[in-house]
Length: 166
Ligand SMILES: Cc1cc2nc3c(=O)[nH]c(=O)nc-3n(C[C@H](O)[C@H](O)[C@H](O)COP(=O)(O)O)c2cc1C
Image 1 (cartoon, rainbow, N blue to C red):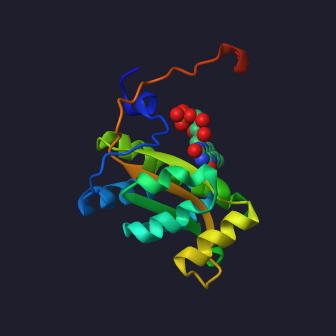
Image 2 (image 1 turned 30 degrees about the vertical axis):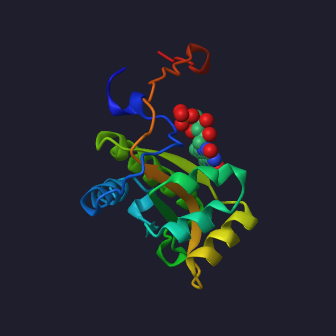
Image 3 (image 1 turned 30 degrees about the horizontal axis):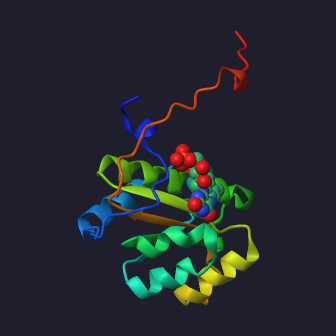
């Protein structure tokens, strides 16, 4: 139960402390290490450290309220021009987001996945706030920071979800 997979929980309250650039780079490096269909790697990232912009992202609704106390938001987007197997792109982006969150735990940080795609209003809001005029598709926002409270690991193992064929 000790490794980062089990220590990753959604963290929604953060210490009032900036995330250093070298840590952010390590998160992005990990995120780009994710598997993707046909190795298409259609992911792009907008790193938001400016408080006012993070607060605007939080205006998307109550589901995004944790952004208000977060020192960092990373928005994951997909570039349709890079699709090779188009229909798999959300899975590629999900793999990237998950890998980024795990790397954050490894670095002593925590984060929360804020769903954007495929909800049109949330996608539109993210594009407007970030000033994106291109065809990039916003997929998710990750709020990130040093956890304010201790993160309690949880074991979700459920035998009932497994069918063995042997
Ligand atoms: C696709 C997706 C969308 C999510 N959207 C939100 C969200 O908008 N707001 C939020 O607070 N948590 C969001 N979460 C986090 C989940 O609520 C969280 O992962 C789940 O409750 C399990 O808790 P854990 O991450 O601590 O294991 C999202 C997670 C996923 C995978």
